[in-house]
Image 1: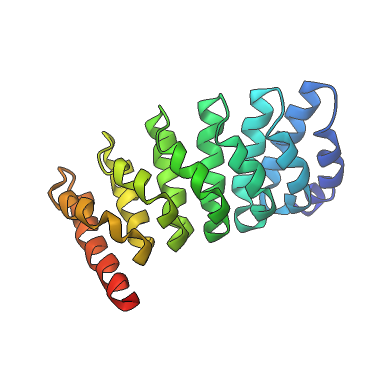
Image 2: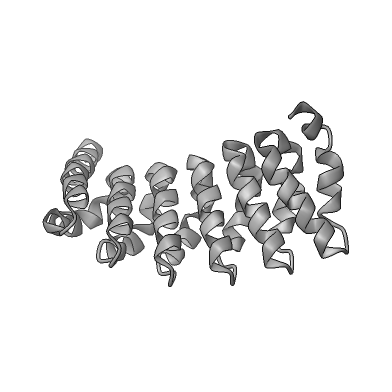
Length: 206
């Protein structure tokens, strides 16, 4: 791995090649290197706008493998939530989730992405909002709507995001109470915990 990491600067430069195959191979190599590719974050951020969906897919995957080290890429990842390719959007949402609370600036875009046509993307987006913590409350209306999602995992993660939203999620209490009757046992149980968490947070702030 150490030897691979030594090639990161060259691979990052290769992401700017005019040859799409070179860019594709460079992005794939950086994804394989994983956390050792931190120095390539700026180049990978730029690759999220590549005209080739395969390059964008690998760039998003590489950033996702970097976890919190990909924080400088949050603005580019936020824009990439609107990518035309569903697999890219899925990996982008996952990469934002991996940055945790540092993804707070992406919350408005994440809220919008809860309306994605793909349940896989919506699930990843809801997971990212849960990971953001209290800042997720800025998407409270979209999260309330997600409690009606046809996908149980999306509903479950939306409940978790609202629970993490604390006092800011107070407007969601009626919807969370309704979610106690969700057909999915895990979502229903999570809703009970969320009602308590949000109520306590709201009471503490009063």
